[in-house]
Image (cartoon, rainbow, N blue to C red; front, top):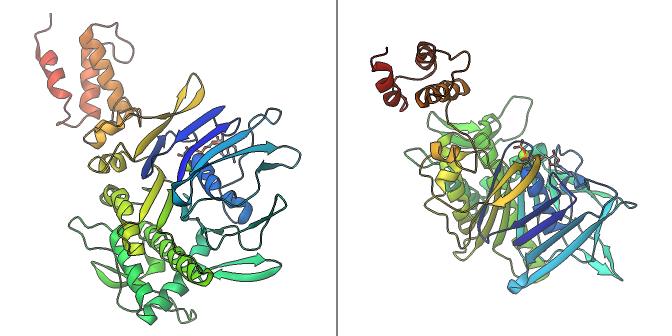
Length: 435
Ligand SMILES: Nc1ncnc2c1ncn2[C@@H]1O[C@H](COP(=O)(O)OP(=O)(O)OP(=O)(O)O)[C@@H](O)[C@H]1O
Ligand SMILES: [Mg+2]
């Protein structure tokens, strides 16, 4: 579990500090302020590898670069390792080597780390499989340092060079899910349970595997797993919508990582760890509001389904642009284990602030809260017309094109719906006799 992260001279702000909660951590902030960057840093803190360094097919996850190459750049972190021990690590950028340098040794994180990048890529780190040893203060990498999948490789499988030999390390969703279904064993059962756990339930059908396989064409010999939709019993998963594919890919990555972790634990004579850290960029991507409303609470619960262990724990660190995601966690947010962070701009500088937790009630209030910072949750034109009307009511000097009450009224009629809550305040003034 990642406890804290401190950055100096790297990323969009001169300094950043993140003191994470053990369970849910949500990061909000405008485009380009560093949410994805912080998730890349969190992944690195837990695995000490940059996703793009391990797979150049990725379109993000690049190694962090110092902002000013002439000044020291530092990443400091604290990770809670096995038996709850807190371990500090400090890394400085070595400009000559173009690399982050710190004490040799493998990361201490005791459980699986899963990173869902915004473009459909995934990265997985397994404390049993992504192992390296230290020899006279140098890291000797004998196994893969992590599994990094481009969005395509999640589906078709991952082949990487291990000690000069091209090795297939994952068969991919299409082949694995098909063989799990054929075996009718615990893997198919787990995949179905995780999918159902992540799917929308509110008056809807849960997300379920379909009836049998499908073929895409006579030339394509693959038996494609299917999902069941309310209007069709078996839609080939490759034809499913973006939202359904994103969640199915997540379910598969979780099931694959957990299955392989358990197999590796058996081979190594170790125990499997049911602690999971999930890093999730743009957690609401492609999801309808109905699904956005349940995805975080569902994820917080699903590791118990995955591991069949009621004491399994998850640390979720997610970036979001969705006020509905924040509204959805109100009944679950626990200040002892959850945190909310906001990236903002202050005098031209990016700042990262923990935000005091306060329920806002609905998405409109979340949109105008500090987390999203809108002044109104209306169209730009609606906001301007209301501001002009309010200025008029206060008696402020009128500004073009709202010099007259008639102009303002006409604009309000054009841009606001008849039931807008602003109307009663305005109508009272509008209907007052004018001299
Ligand atoms: N590898 C890197 N090294 C140093 N700084 C980086 C690196 N990657 C991104 N940044 C910094 O982070 C900024 C972009 O941040 P990021 O992509 O995290 O934004 P975001 O908050 O995720 O935005 P969006 O909501 O649009 O996805 C860049 O402008 C740059 O300053
Ligand atoms: Mg981003």
